[in-house]
Amino acid sequence: MEPTTTLRPITAADVSDAQALTASFGWPHRREDWALMQSLGQGVVVEQGGRLAGTALCWRYGDDWATMGLIAVAEALQGQGMGRRMMLALMERLEGRSLALHATRAGLKLYSGMGFEPTGTVVQHQGAVSQPGLLPLPEGMHLRPVTRTDLPGLLALDRDAVGMDRTPLLAALLQMPGGIALARGGALAGFALVRRFGRGQVVGPVIAPGLDGARAMIAHMLGQRTGQFMRIDIPKSCGLSPWLLELGLDDAGSVIRMVRGSDVPAPQHAEMFALASQAFG
Ligand SMILES: CC(C)(COP(=O)(O)OP(=O)(O)OC[C@H]1O[C@@H](n2cnc3c(N)ncnc32)[C@H](O)[C@@H]1OP(=O)(O)O)[C@@H](O)C(=O)NCCC(=O)NCCS
Image 1 (cartoon, rainbow, N blue to C red):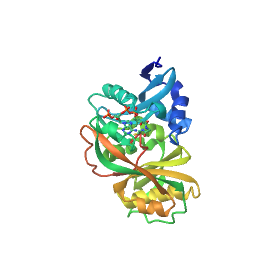
Image 2 (image 1 turned 135 degrees about the vertical axis):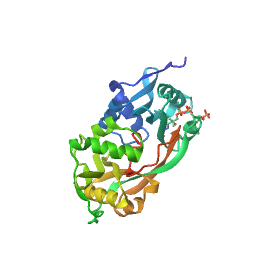
Image 3 (image 1 turned 135 degrees about the horizontal axis):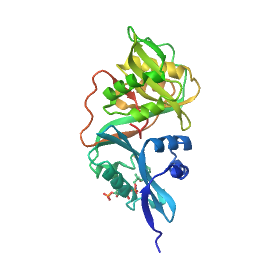
Image 4 (image 1 turned 90 degrees about the horizontal axis):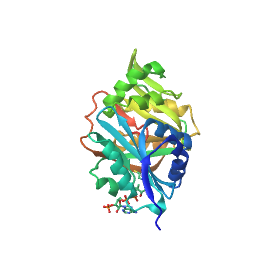
């Protein structure tokens, strides 16, 4: 007799099994990384014969948007419709919102068949970082640590650059030490956050008015972590790749950004140079 397959909401008690599932594909998420992602989002799991066999999560941003990620089915059970079933269950709960995700090669066919359209490429850079050297700051700007009181300014810049209201995400990431602000007088012009993730630390999001400001913040951050394993996921079009490669952050592969529904409006004053993560956007 075939073991029964059930679909139900994910809970914090699933995090250990879910982390083991994604580790089986070589994904680097630690238990703590999974716990953060689960606590900020919603999701479903499939169980087969009482064992966790698949996960799919989403993060709601404001009233209009959600991103989807951590979509995974145990290798032995792939190709049996579980990925599609979990996606449909989540999409039903996200009715009326535009949806964005970052597709691996394995996921492209599934998402294309569900109305997601490719909109760009994201490159994952990672490695042991070498000393970036001194970089000039844009005219009239300086760097300083971000503080918790910067949250409203961060949110305004993030909304402009990303086109989504990511308040819960940024409030959580701001709790983690090491963030840098790019300031013009008393006004915030950009920011870069950093946190422990996977094999080392991840830099992101990075939001800046231009390439020079983004590079200055990232250089400052990497300069304090020379020799350490760092990861940064960037839109391919942002222009940072050649410099990151010089610093020892190798190209570890790409994913395709896909959107279902109308895409975000074009940014006005700030641009996204690094994602918070492929799942968070
Ligand atoms: C991507 C993934 C979640 C799909 O889950 P799944 O349960 O295997 O997918 P489904 O059985 O629901 O199939 C969905 C579609 O993808 C196609 N598909 C599934 N596995 C496939 C494979 N190995 N090669 C080609 N197509 C495949 C199916 O044919 C189906 O399309 P169709 O309905 O038009 O026939 C799963 O392969 C997986 O976990 N991969 C590793 C992790 C990963 O990369 N996740 C995606 C992150 S964005």
